[in-house]
Length: 283
Image (cartoon, rainbow, N blue to C red):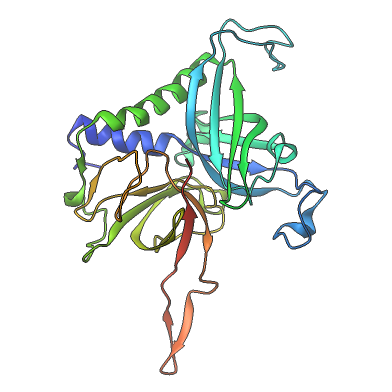
């Protein structure tokens, strides 16, 4: 991006991209209800893809025994713990979390060949809210290069709070919003592929924790971080939820779409219908 001239802008976008991860869920729990969208897959290892984002990453002061091939049950000299947030309809409980592979730094197809992409297994789901459709999983790694990269991405995002409001309106990335329209940016792994960025606008805030927006998404985007801007295209973080428009240090989690089909009949002709998606704030 040639227009990202300032260090602050580069820090903002790099941290936003680096903390987004691909999830490969390889288990469907029998605890899911008959009405669940994945009910037919209960008890199987059929793989489904999704997205998540790193919400916390720190080096443990007192490492614990590690079962990886290198440690083989020994206590490593260094160890990192990080939390990944996603949608609970994607990862339902700890049973599914333990069978979920997180792929970090899968930015493009070359990342798999040059081994920039790293993969680790989750250890458990530490927080779940099925009403708000979010789940927090915990991961451990003793790989120093991976631990330092993930921790750096997390610290860069936390550091965004200390930056001056980032005016991104001149980049041509965000839509030209009308009055009271809040630009929205989503980084996700559509169809399990490398990262893609989509943009749109916030359409409504129906209730205290659910938001609506028209940034396009595809299957595989569930659990992606939803980044909000103000009506002037500036990104700013406000810890306390105020009146619309508002921002969250904890990104809202993309949940799903109200639009089942992108085409509709209008005057005898097919035309594109705006995709309206929704997500829930994670706090």
